[in-house]
Image 1 (cartoon, rainbow, N blue to C red):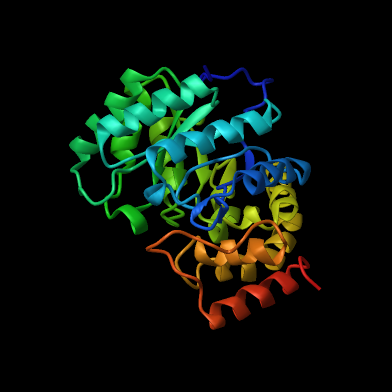
Image 2: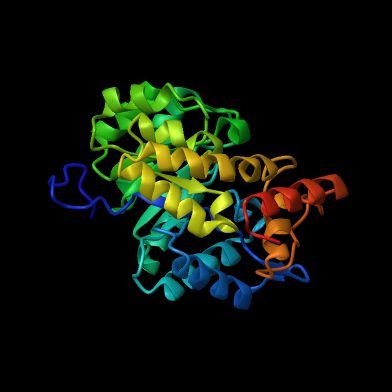
Length: 304
């Protein structure tokens, strides 16, 4: 169990660049061989941890069996070399508990639990949802706030309440792109509450406000650059980080010119990592998007 009161000389295990892993698919099925190869490539490229079956991993359209199998494959391939934060969220509290229990039993280091989507719960509903999961499963939990996807937006106050009432809610992935939040959350939840950005374009500012890393879409295709960027911010070398930010920013932008993970899967296909295939209702990206992604990758030095 990761404590929120780590000794000053102990490195925080959840810091740096964590790719929100794509789930490669082929002929409508999860491409196990491509996924396993992809995980090892990520580690070889310097990624600091893995996040299987998040939004970028197409969790809404994976079957429960596929969801669990992808987490198991990731843990098997990682072999303890870096932390694995398994995506276990759902808009059903009971289903989220089931996925989180599975993640712990499979050997995940932590769970990433998204704010319930579609239901539009109140702040009290959000509190009770996460409290029920934390009470049911003794595993470190990151609360994933992504209001652009879920509509619901967990407040700083509700998250602070959870961080104080639940010993295993140790951090958050914040994809709101609101750079006031990390400072407000730091004041509300304390300096030991781990804050990871979920939005590549603002990760530089996020870390300056007290964040310690990013669960990244771009890191799927630029893992070494994203790891170097995070290493620079964690050393306080924001001049070096800004140079990398300038190199990566067009790619960050291109990853969202159409709904993710369409662009990032196309980008991965250009590198020969997997097919560009996604599962309906996601469809192949447009020719305009392909052009934007290709140009951004050239600019980042990933393609000739």
